[in-house]
Length: 130
Image 1 (cartoon, rainbow, N blue to C red):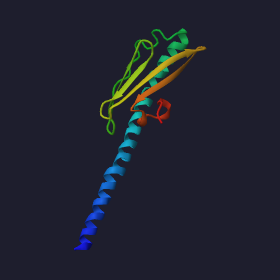
Image 2 (cartoon, helix red, strand yellow):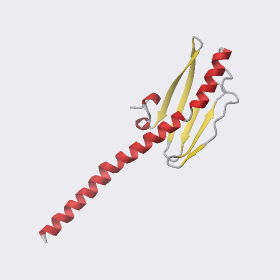
Image 3 (cartoon, rainbow, N blue to C red):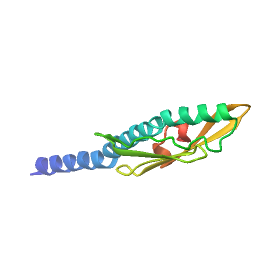
Image 4 (cartoon, rainbow, N blue to C red):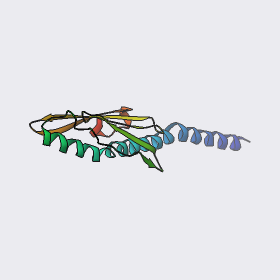
């Protein structure tokens, strides 16, 4: 009887550890993968905006006409991006509750990008992640 009780307690402890420690870590890595896919999915639009802005010498209108088709990823769900006339890019992934904002800056004829995303702990370092 005691052995059975100890065995049951041991299994319960293992189950608790899996739920409390292992599953959140697995979920966290999936979020990081989805965030990286969301950020990197904006690269074609970033290149188009940068080329237009560097050619014209300004960001006004650099995003006009630039579009990214939504991408449906089997693992991460649908990812969408909107490009503003000023070249700013907003992206989101509803399945994982991820959002990013990529903001261009034109200095000395070259475009640089700043990126902010939410949740911060899921974002790659290139997007102000930890």
